[in-house]
Image (cartoon, rainbow, N blue to C red):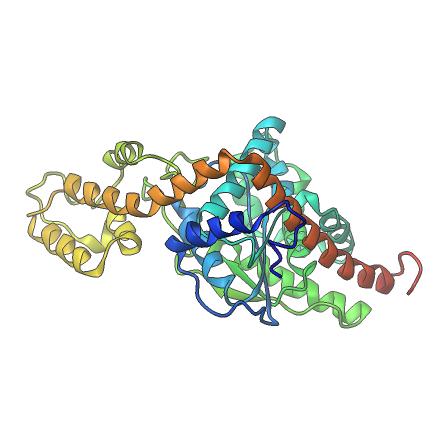
Length: 363
């Protein structure tokens, strides 16, 4: 019996079929239903509406990896607290991100999808690891400086110790692999160092997590100057309509040498052309590149073609997201089931950790 059908009615067989026939039609499932031994863990912050940077950098990978690994995917709401969000806005964002994850093709029958704060062992393990992490290691984390600059009035301790909680997120499930973008590679190296330190002090406990590279480790924003981000207002939203997307694309940065349509361009330096690399067929990309170099194709036409291709991907995701929003009890059931399995696995780990560090009665 499948995990989905076994949930005592919370998820019926026909609801499971909705995922197979809907979300996975876009995201092309592959591989056997049997769980491999290797485990993968990854998380996404609920800090705003999902955008194509999240989709390309994380969600496409998650859909592929769920067929290859025992996958744990989390909406990491505890990390979002470093930005001091409005409580109701955070709750809404958690649900919207969960909807986006599922609508993009992550299958709750294959992967364990859950909300981080629903598994209290994350913070318990984070404290244990904090007590093992030298101050100097955290001082070297470059993301702390970057995040502090973006919220100078709220440089809190959570921003500084963020990588320790991230390490706990990973090792709590004894993950062998972690898909990360290039901005998180330094954090994963800290996680590996922490694992080595824990295993040296307390005995072999955690596997040393290895990086799984993304096909899109860094997706630039519409400004062409920084990583795509809701906070920088340079994103293409995953749930936006075609009209909303085109409105944003009109003002997006292109080849700086093309001031007029008659100016010849260089596609390789055009930020819009980089998006075509993910959403446009090889033959159409070749036509666009030739038209740009010869000044036969203007930037507006290039953007319209991109918008059409984006909509072929985003349209079905938007429809599945709308259906999930209309069934809040179904979303609740999926997240509750995921949290239940995550807590069971997390508690197995914490029983080992407590015993080894001297907390509680040794089994």
